[in-house]
Image (cartoon, rainbow, N blue to C red):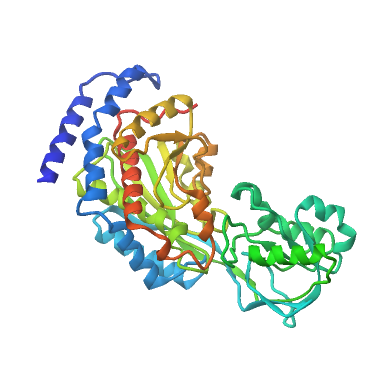
Length: 472
């Protein structure tokens, strides 16, 4: 009965828009903003039906249960690993069985790095086993490891001031956590800066808003012309302990062993599925998350949740018998954690059709209870998105904020396509980010239901409106 009632609403809405009125002239909208507001407001019943199905109806908890089945079966999905390729094949089958259209895999080449066996032990002033996680793309140590005295610094500026002390030592960074975007530079650049002053290795305080003795991994970047040195993250607790010891003038010696190795690039795939548009099938609203993860935990939060609410958005729309005017395209990216490798190759392949992309969306900051939508685009497009988000008043999630960028959609946004990301509890997100703690225990099915509802309403309405979002 819900399906029949909802099909009626969708049909009535379609008839109201196909009145024969000329919408464009010379590529410029001739409609007033009031007319656009009225069009968006007419989706109120559609939005309520999506919300009811996702949050209260037969689809509630579906995205959570689907995700749990995948990550419990496959585990973490590091770029280049057999786990990732197994997950991609499973997801391709899942999307086909779900009845989505044009399900296919698009081949790409991705990095293949493995951490191998790794350990760190403080030998002086006492024996203490240090929890570490090697950073992505790091080289390994010699088989016997590196044993050296430690220099503790709290910033790159301090490292420069004490450069003469760094040669032949292991640099430990104990930088304070300000926020992720400002603090992550120590993870990505710490090895290079330490190598420039002659260090043998670097250990970086994990970039985390909370720690229960948990190291947090992530990608790091070497620089041409600078020696490559092994690098790993350590816990907040150990970084602070060594900082206290150093402040007392105590000599610290660490033995570091890392079996990390980089192999030749390997084959992988971006996973694609669609609901083909009914009127403008060549035009696209892209909904996405990334399927790869780091090799610790289960990759449930980063970014299993984002990938699966993106799938759920299309499932909800399909289950309600809806077919938007534009094509809704789901893309599950590969090798995001290595810098958006799969997404860049997708952009290179599809940018010839960039004028047909109305909106690119990525969920990659968790699927806790959403607080709004982050958006990057023209002022006119932002005003439209504010009206779209007003349809989510039943969930009390209506904010439109700035900074809609995401690693996998930045290529499109930088080229002028409007972009959106789901805004979430980032402070909580970085408790578990890139750590052994990123498991299904972190996920909340009810919060995922709400996140999926937001994602489905936004993507459907933007895909079904008569006009594409205006660009700058």
